[in-house]
Image (tube, rainbow, N blue to C red; front, side):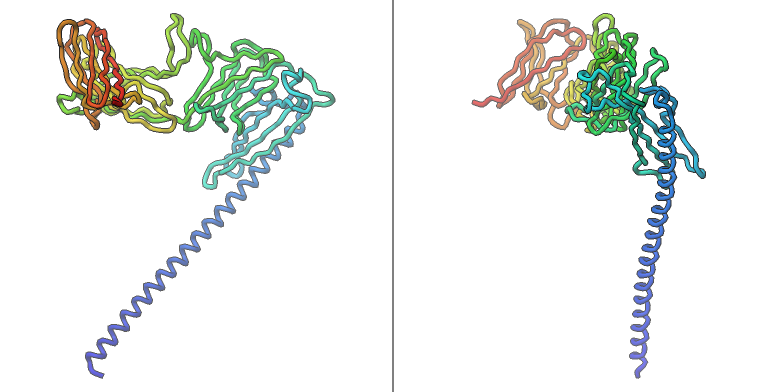
Length: 453
């Protein structure tokens, strides 16, 4: 065989062996990866199963303890009913912490009618024991056992009334698994109860001791806002005062919580400088939800804060309440409010984060911010505006265009204290007019209707 042919054969043989080697390595890698995955799955199953067995054993032990208690002692410390059981305790088994949560509630069974038709609403007690744990093999679903315990002989009245707590969102939908905190320091023993709502967003507590303006109730849930009652020392006239329970009657309260949101704020300089980032701007952000009124009958808002933007004019506000918010610049500031995007006031919906751009201008004693929008609330760009006071024309200009942070706005500084006539016009729209009293920082909103002719 010629030397050239021998070289070709040897080259082909080496190449084929290399391919075989690579394929073999790939197969081995897949094999060992599969083995490792299976081993990890088996380890997880074994670990979870072992811990679940221990958790189940702890739950059974607690249920056995419950069954050996007298009916009078069957309750939780600080609970409704009150008793000797801990609401929550941590038990360590072989280096692993297990959290054992116990709730005891009265049940008003429909078998013999319910309040108000049933004069005795505390028919029997329902005990729920839930065991959870963390760590490498953390519980995905707690081990839960439930048992009902009836009194000896005929039912006996434990006194008190029935407290019903409903938790919904702003759409009226039930919020399940919401955490309900109930405190009452005016009764003996005192109540300090933590409980969760059922699938209907409800918690029913018969046998609640009767008292007036004494139950502090707060409702929360991870990723949601919070709602609570207020004492008369916190708010003079609260819309939702601390709850009153009347003997033999039902007290029903509804709390509203929603998915919280984040508001990302950017403060900018004036339009004449092309809206540069402007740090250290103080502004007031106020929601529309009311908690009640103060001693002077002035509204108390759920959110009303004076804030300041940070470096680069940026401020992030996490865990905010879905609401309708309005922006102001405080009196005495070195800047005036020259526009916002979106137009203030603006709506923040549950679970939908919001960006807020605030445009400022050097402060003047008297000024007027003109906002022009359509009937749906959308800003109208390049609308011609003018302000005048009889018989003189004062100034004119056009609103900012789409894409600019003060779209639909025009700012008139350096005015005198007076009443001005304001006109806005644009092709395809019916001209809008209004009257504005300018004194300090002033604002007017003009809505323009589409011209159908």
